[in-house]
Length: 382
Image (cartoon, rainbow, N blue to C red; front, side, top):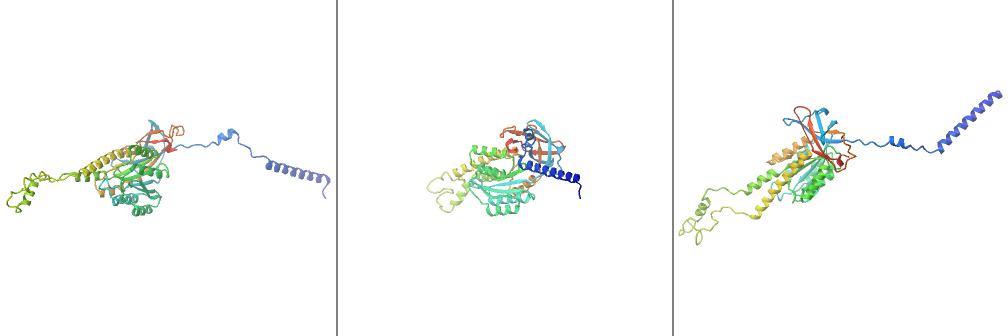
């Protein structure tokens, strides 16, 4: 049996515990969650991590790719200000094949050849690369959307690629840029197989170029222009004949037919004026040939400038076999590329989206050669 004093103490303790629990429950159920102070909100403000990603090709004086590029090997200068390189790494590539099939202006363009070049590029890429394919003549057509399955893309090219008429390169580049923007910035590539002829206006071409540069894409071109120029020149050459050869053939043709007429005499009088010509010209065909040569030359100049700007190369093989082999070279170059990153000393978010910044990438190691794009558009890096 408890003593009265001990019993009173226990009752008092239990009463205090129940009261405390009730107060705590009331506080947790009624009082709203505290609102962060302005100072606390500033502490949790989102932080923007700015990073410029540049594709860089590394090779030695003999053209062999360097498999061991280090941060200290790379010098990056942006608008004449040296930058601190943060990383040098390899990442999977996003490769869009843009395949020209218009043959009406260039006699050497063949769908079979273009197909073989595209397949050779696919075969040379690494596992993990994303690929897509577009064919174009007067307008672009997607043959294969983005996929990591190169065999799937190869089947689409074999089944769907076909010859066309016309060559609207500007419209095709714009469609290609739309697809490339679906992939991460840093290692985007557009492989163009065409002759450089563009039936679009200069304004449309300029717009397509701006879009391509803004998309931070490296352009590689395997061009039919050299082969086409040789073929057109061959067709335009006059056959070489010794003096009097045409007249001799005419004389032999009349001997024995009419013994009353001297050799070479045809009809009722002197030979007509075309006996010694030996060549007939089609003015319309000659104008078309000259126009094609002119357009290929203009396209060659444009594409050379654009590949140099984006860090790629313009390849102009002289034979079909060489063109197909160049497909493997392009694939090997794409997968030998590094992505160099740095935080720009001038913040990106304080600049206009359309601002263009000049880039120079140099080598700090003897015997090392680096190639990259000449600049970037700020909006494309955000």
